[in-house]
Image 1 (tube, rainbow, N blue to C red):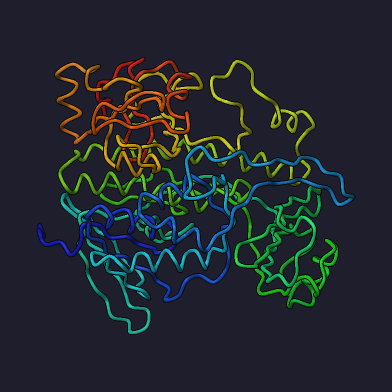
Image 2 (cartoon, rainbow, N blue to C red):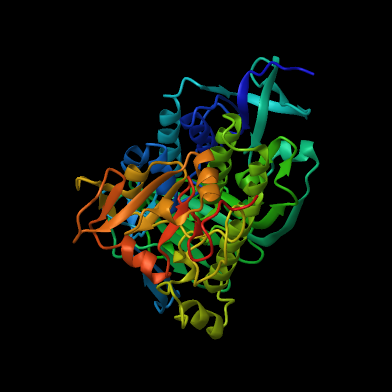
Length: 517
């Protein structure tokens, strides 16, 4: 059995999901070889947004400042009909997860530009070998590793590469998934959409407000992208096909009907697609994992398709890196799908519901339910599209649900260190396992055995103090914005155990012992 490895992890596909996996792994010391069948970045602007959860991942990777320079904050959404009736308008609440300067919850992106910057960030890692124009034609695995056979699309030359694990991030049609024999389950909507990407020539009222034109026959998504780009996604009417739009001359009437002319925008490109609601039967086969579109496909309405892939890769990446270093057991990899699948299903269901509003298929009762304020909740009520990150399963201890802090993501206000130097939470607590106490040293709440188990994971221990009190040592933090201590109090806890991805794994209310796998 071969015992030579060319890299720790092979990544098949080098779009946003593959990039996120490569960045996460190499950032944490793993070596990666990435295979991408195309030589250039895909030119079409597919995804249109990212949010503060994704930006927090970029922050951990040390690239958030660079990404912020090529994206733009977005602060509202609206749903209107062609006769001008506004069905719903929502203002985005401020972020709880912390961005660098301001606190937007969402950002507009132009995917080719953001993806190019992600690639430039990845180029700075010597442990990353990117092979463009290399099409993977075979994947074989044994007890210790994976062998990747790739063919150079220009020369036809084949290579064999050996890695300990592999991540297939090769898109919705995923050749790797097919090679593994994993079925993709679900449906494809019959309605075909035309996507029109434009370069803006001038500003118009509400052009900076993403607008969903609700109509049963011709629903439209009208959204500003970063860098002076704008997109319309328009459902074709029954009987319309791609053949009806052989050139931009036939596309322009669709924009004219929305009040836009050649004075407003220039059409850059257009394409056609169908919406999918599909998920792979399993996201893992031995040492090979599926991520992003290779594992799941959802409609675009929640803006979570690409982001879900990035989150997949990050969740898997930080665990794989620690397994490779011997810090975590291989059984940790079983938590990947257990944690990510429910979240993907959550956003898929939101996208389906929003699509019903856009296509005027939602009932008044459904629209009212989307706007309803839930009663008797511990957390502030939010519409589903603004729901904060939550884990519903996986490496967690204690009850889950609205009244529990477990499974939620730690907020990230600016806080102070023990001498009051101001920084964001993650910059002061690091990216390992950490136990945080509210006015108490969390280590004092543990039994000797419990502390030994946390120590084995490399955990650190921090205490958050009120800004009205004195710090008592170098492990103290100061709640300068009065955000963390009230958050602990809201859930009735004195201490929490925080995972490297900033989700709460346990709290003293239900026991601070290391969660079982």
